[in-house]
Image 1: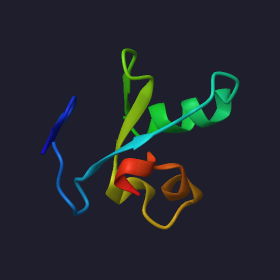
Image 2: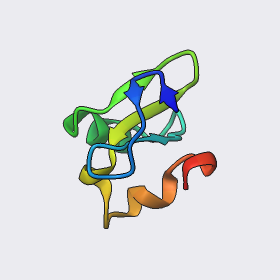
Image 3: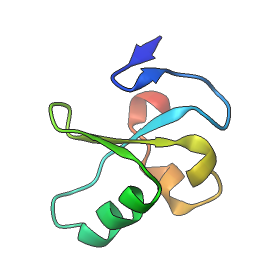
Length: 66
């Protein structure tokens, strides 16, 4: 399976899709600091799973990959 940002792997390099509402500025800044990528067409953030494992961001993974 491939995503907009490359292959999907279930390990520390897995790229998870995260939904972030427009008004969640602080969360967007946090994702940018993690070098997450924004997909404007799909309106999703892509971030390495290893960076969010064990944090509340895991609960925000897109349902399809949760």
